[in-house]
Image 1 (cartoon, rainbow, N blue to C red):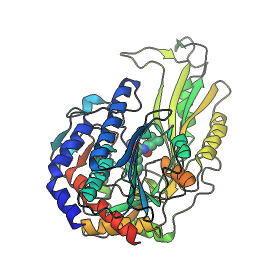
Image 2 (tube, rainbow, N blue to C red; image 1 turned 90 degrees about the vertical axis):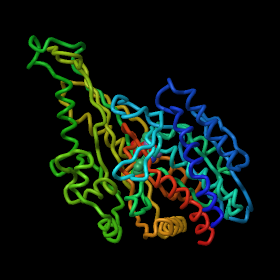
Image 3 (cartoon, rainbow, N blue to C red; image 1 turned 120 degrees about the vertical axis):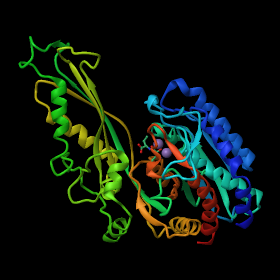
Image 4 (tube, rainbow, N blue to C red; image 1 turned 180 degrees about the vertical axis):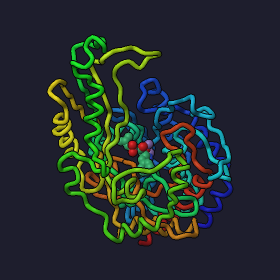
Length: 460
Ligand code: BES
Ligand code: MN
Ligand code: MN
């Protein structure tokens, strides 16, 4: 891989300039105002793949935003790696909290990134990360050192739950056939401690409505005698988690595959300073489920969180009113063993039982996603560990990611292959938040590491 590495060193600035072009397009999949931008981004990704040397590049229509496909099959007898990523991004709001425009990428130094980091929506999640694969591929092609077959599949709907991807994958099983799937859309522990995500949490997302009277009412004339849906919704939500931090939905913890003692030991090795953690996000104290460490709470344990709650008067000044309706969006992160449909049904059955007879409760499930686990005995894990350990000059460790990439479990069901989550971001990159950024160290280290993954995977 010497020539590949040399090509990378010689083209660093151009790689960055190209990423900046990609980051300038606001490919927000959730907001219909940006539909054209999402399509434009797909075009650009296809262009980059072609220029890098991919064959069969195509923008594949789906029921929603297109998937960009491209491949290089050098020898059918060699292993095939499918690279997955997403070119869509989260909405930028609250926009006023960005120090520079979310789609006007700038490079700034930070304490964690003395080499500089690129600030833009999508820089770490996931444009900056999938782009590393395009550039690593380009370098291997240019150096004539590509050791296996590669297929790229970069989608445009990940941030809205990949609704069209299920059918796309089902309809393209042969085309997507592979020996392993490689994804960079997660984080490492720190720039001094490489890690591989061997797990992802699943998701069950639900919206609820509590309805009281037919109309908003004067809170003096009626107050005290009629149900207040907001008060009731708050007390219902409060009952969902007990004072030990356990979720009270009957059967919620059934079937969970607990991490082995070995895995818990491995997790305990992750360097973690609670004071730094609190400081980094501006909280006075941590909290969570009794009996588990912060790292476990945020990765191996399931959660229930209100993502939004509204109703009543929220305009300026005061209005004395009893609202007729209250709403909340609630998400549950699930861990291996839990099934999103099953958990959603348990919530649907349980939540209304927490309400008094005075109100009507509606429960509306949104998207879900299955959790995922990669055994450390898998060839792909071993190859990733070797590759990371080589370029970071430090042994990579296994950890679980707290976030979700629902398509990963679907890939396993439909294509029968495992995904290796070799991400290069940091939790402090503030993905989904204002001032998202991606370290230049991480961007380049990723490009340098990826070729070794292929090399070691072929050798495994
Ligand atoms: N890249 C993230 C997922 C992630 C981040 C996993 C960090 C592990 C560590 C992905 O783009 C994402 O945001 N996923 C959503 C899924 C949802 C939209 C279905 C999530 O986790 O909320
Ligand atoms: Mn992502
Ligand atoms: Mn995301």
